[in-house]
Image 1 (tube, rainbow, N blue to C red):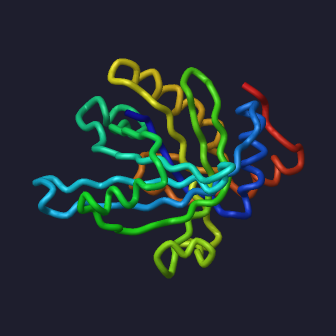
Image 2: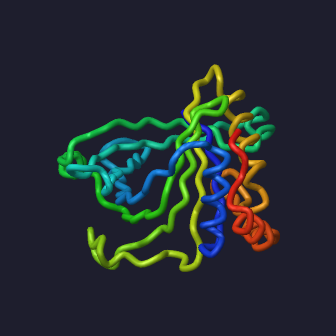
Length: 218
């Protein structure tokens, strides 16, 4: 399972966010260029429809690597309502480049595909936290990566995730929430599907960060 929050930021403030993250995380950023294909099952595969994501990391050398990811339902109930992050089941595994063909043979159909381009930070702070900042692009034709265009021009998505277990999700959620407080001047981070919009103070915060060049390593 994993804990996750996300938000949006104007592209003009992404450089300032990168400076802040560099100071907070204390690690080098990694380039992000991922081709994401969402596949859905057809009815005869079961009563409950199934959805998987195939992620192709285009920046890996000497050749792109593939990962299959299944995101399940979010935790519900009083416990879930009391924490500010979404806790959901998630399973992922490395797969070969033949995975797409295999899922097609199992009866899955391509629902949609996206190209995400940006950067990410991976670090340890009471939990193994990953932060990605990327533009989300759609393709006019199947697999036409070179023709991808932004879904929301001028905006990028920020996603913070951390792996968790049924035993420690409370501590992991607290670690993610605590870290997100440092990003609050630039980006509203909330549970997926609950959009908070852009931060009114982002322009002033970005100008301050650009002038002094960074944050503080935690």
